[in-house]
Picture: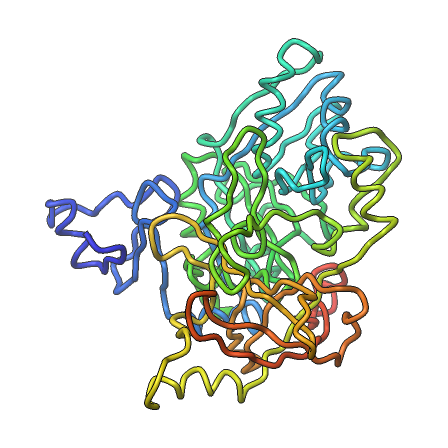
Amino acid sequence: MSIEKRYEDVLKIFERPDLEPKISDYLPFYHENILYTTVLKNFLYPYEFTGWKDEQLSWKKTCYIHGGLNPSPLYRFSGKEAEKFLSKYCVNTFSKFPVYSGKHCITCDEEGYITSDGVILKTAEDEFETYWMWSLVIAMKNEEGNYDLEFKDLTNDKFLFQVGGPNSFKVLNSVTDDGLEDVKFMRFINTRIDGKEVRIVRLGMAGSLAYEVHGNISDAKSIYDTIYKAGIEYGIRRLGWHTYMMQHTENGFPQFGDHFMMKLPGSPSNKGNVVGSIGKEATGYANPVELGWKKTIKFDHDFIGRKALEKLVENQTRDMVSLEWNTEGILDVYASRFIEGETYKDFDEVNDMIYKGIGTVLHQDKVVNAQGDLIGVSSGRVYTYYYKKMISLCSLDLEYCQPGTEVIIIWGEPNMIQKKIRATVSRFPYYDENRNQSFDVAIK
C-alpha cells in the first residue's frame, strides 16, 4: 500500500464502499478529494485539503483549523507535591504561575540536552496538565512513591484542535458560550461549544493570533465540524499535516523532528537518523540555549541539568536565527536536472520535514563561513509561498548572528556532489506580522 491515498482508494482499503471509513476518533471524514497519509498515525490522516499553497496562506490572511496533533500525549500531575516534582525536572520557574495560565515547558539531561519540550497548563491549585512531555512520564516511573502526587494519562481521553490566523478570534468567539476578549497570550478559559465542555488556550505555532481547543474525545468530531462550518464565512481552511509542519520555521520556534531531536532518557542514540550535509555522525540533539530559548531557563530552583545550563548560558556560543536562502543558488540546484553532468540533490519537497515516508528523519545542513569553517547548523528548510523565499532556522555562532550577515549553506549529502548556497541572516522570527503575543482582538 502506498503512503498516500485519495478518497477512492480509502474506500477500497476498508472494502466497504457502502460505509464511511473510520479515519480516526478525532476528525470528521469529508467526502472530498483529500490527500491522506498514514505516517506517524495509526489511521489515515489528512495530508492536504486544498493544497499547501492555499493552506499556508491561512495563518496570515484568514484562519485555519488543524487536528493533526491528535492524540497528543497529555499527562495530569496533581497533589501537594506535584509542583515540587515538576520543578525538579523543568527548567521553567514556578514562582509566578497562576491558575488558567500556561508555559512552554523544557526538560534536560545532566549535560543540558533537551529531553522533552511542550506545554504545561496550571488547571487548578496543585494541578498541572502537560502536553508532549514524555520525559516526565519516564521520570514519574523512576520516582514512583517519592512524591505525594497523583499521575493520570489522559492521552486517549481528550482532543486538541488548533485554530489560528487573524480571523481565529472571530470564528471561535462566534461558537463559544463565553467571549474570548479577555483571554491573553498563554492564558485559557473553560467554556462550552454546542453545550459541550471545552478549554480554549491562546497559543499557537504559526506566530499569528491562534488558539487551541481542548475537550473530551467523544465530542471531537462534532466540535471540529462546528468550528469549521462557523469559519467558512471568515475564509477558514482545514490544515493538513504537510502544511502544518511549515509553521515552525516561519514562526522562529524550533520543533522536535524538524529542527532538533530529543534525547529521551534510556533511548538509543539517534546517530544515523540525520540526513543532509551535517553527516551521519550527527545526532540532532540540542540544548535550549542554542535553540534561542535561553529566556525560558530560570535558575531560581534546582533542576536536572542546571549546572550544565549555567555554563552554557554564561559561555553562550550560538543562538537561533532565520536564514534567507539566495535565489540564484536555489535555481542552480533545479537547473542541474537539465545540464550534462552530476545533478545536485533535489528539492523534492517544499520543506525538509520528512513525514511522508515511514518514520521520522531529521534534515540538517552545515553552515560555513567564507573560509569554509563550520559556524552553524541549518534545519527546517521551507519555501514560504507568502514571502516567495526559501528560509530555514539556524543555530549559528554568535559573531555571525547580526541580520544582513552572509553565510554559506552546504546542500547535499556527504557522499554526493554538494552545492554551496549563499544565505543571509534575516529577521527572527521571519513571520513578524500581527504576532499572537501582541494581537489586540478588541481592535482587529
